[in-house]
Each structure stands twice: as C-alpha cells, then as structure tokens.
Length: 296
Ligand code: FAD
Image (cartoon, rainbow, N blue to C red; front, side):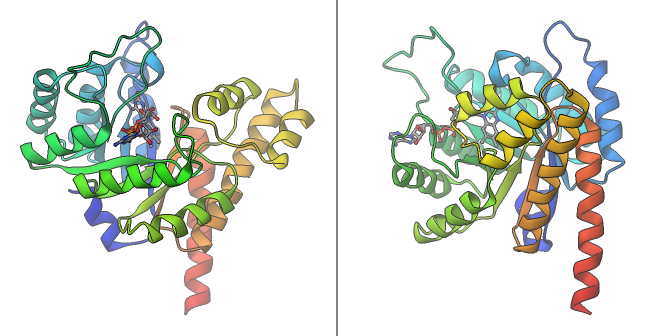
C-alpha cells in the first residue's frame, strides 16, 4: 500500500523508524525488535539506509522486506544517493520493487568525512533521486523536512524553497527531523503552507535516552535544546534509568500535544528499543479514546 493513501484515510498515523544492526551484529537482533513493534500495531515501519555510517545499506532491503512480507506491516525503505550513481541506485530500486516494497524515503544522505564529491556526479540533492524514482514508477515517495532548517543551509527560507522543489519533483509526504519544542513544528507548518507545500508533514519525535545521544543529535542536525530538556539532563545526570523515564515522558507529552493539534502523523525514532515506542503508543491510544469520547 502507498503510504500517502494512509495519510488520506485517517489521523494520526503512527509510524516507527528502526535501523539495521551495526555491521558486526547479527541481523537476527532486529527480528525481536520488529516482533515487539508489531504488537503495537504501527501503520508502517521505516528502515534507515546506512545512516551515520553505522548501518549497512544492503541490510535495509532485507529488513524492509521482512517488515512487509513476513510481519505484514507496511514498510518504508530509506535510500540515500550522494555517494552512489544512477546505475547502482537503479539496481537498488529494482530490488526493492522485486521485494514488494512500495514506499521509499528518498534522501541525499550526509556527505561522509573525507569523501570527495566528483564534479560530474549523478546526484547532488535528494530531488535528483526523487525524479529518478518517479521515472522508474510504482513507488510512493517520501522525503525529509527540517523544522529548524537543514544544518548546511543558513536560512530557513532557503530550506523551505528546497523542500518545495522536492515536493514538486514527486515527494508525496514529508517526515521531519527531530525537534524538542512543538512550537518550532507548528511555525514550520505555517511556513510550509505559505510555500504551497501541501503534502502531509509528519512529526519526527525522538525520546531522549542519554546525554551523549542528545549531544550527538544536536551536533549532527542542529536541533535546539529547550530549557526543559537541559533541566532533565542535569537533574538525572548519573541516573540513567530515571533519565530514560523522563525522556520518554517528555516525548509522550510532545506527542500528546501534537495529536491534540490535529497533525497528520507522528514518526517515532525507536532507536530499536521497543519499550520507548510502547509507552508512547499506550499514551496515544488513551488520548485517542479521550478525544473520541469528547467528540461524541
Ligand atoms: P536534500 O533535500 O538534498 O538537502 C541537502 C542540503 O542541500 C540542504 O541543506 C538543502 O537545503 C540543500 N539544497 C537542496 N536543494 C538545493 C539547491 N537546489 N541548491 C542549493 N542547495 C540545495 N541519512 C542517512 O544516511 N540514512 C537515512 O536513512 C536517513 N534517514 C533520515 C530520515 C529523516 C526523516 C531525516 C529528517 C533525515 C534522515 N537522514 C538519513 C539524514 C539526511 O540524509 C541528512 O539530513 C542529509 O544531510 C540531507 O538529506 P536530504 O535528503 O534532506 O537532502
């Protein structure tokens, strides 16, 4: 099923992101994660592609195929292009098709440290990949969005212009980079509307689990850190269990507020830890019940 059709049918769509195990780990380690996540009844699960250089790209197809064909959950395969060329990329896309994968999150990818970009490269931006997937046909295409602007782009307005180019090239839904303050997301939705970006924009939510994880993320993606989060990090320094609990609670409150504000969907970065998603889903379900009662 095309993911864009899910967004047409109901609100909110709840989806999860998982990543392939690191190269030295057995792929079996992710099976349990998927089984646990399946019990939470997600609308779809996305599988990252070589993100941060820790995953292994060829595993994305294997895991996405498992999600879709063994566990019967709609799968979204991430695909990056900056270090690839058209021939290799076409082969990956054809493989996805052979495995019944119908949805691709088309990304440029981060430029690995020390990687020399050739002047005559096939891909410079995600929109180039989107065009190629569209030309091949048979896929619903998603793309990444950045509520605080992309880290390489100085002006949020330029980020929005580039986002619109991705939508014009064929992206049918957008998933955002994590953010810790919902007001940033709401302002971004308003700006996107002004740029005539009229596809579903899905909120990416990452529960904080540790100080090092937060530091890594803010340096990688430039997300701003509200004082609420800084207070949590300071309060529970040296008490990892309490920090994790407080982080999950913050994410659950974020999601609660997002749903009350009628957003299209939430995409939970599970970091392959089903217990994070479990608590969030429990809260989403009880909120949906409440909202339903209020509307009757
Ligand atoms: P693009 O949309 O191409 O943008 C890249 C930069 O180029 C931006 O600064 C943009 O403003 C600029 N730009 C775009 N068009 C133009 C133009 N015409 N002229 C000048 N500048 C332009 N990475 C992975 O490696 N694997 C993953 O699985 C993965 N999954 C992700 C999932 C989500 C939801 C998100 C938000 C990010 C993910 N990433 C992943 C990270 C992503 O690859 C990086 O953020 C990357 O740096 C940008 O990718 P993009 O597709 O957004 O690029």
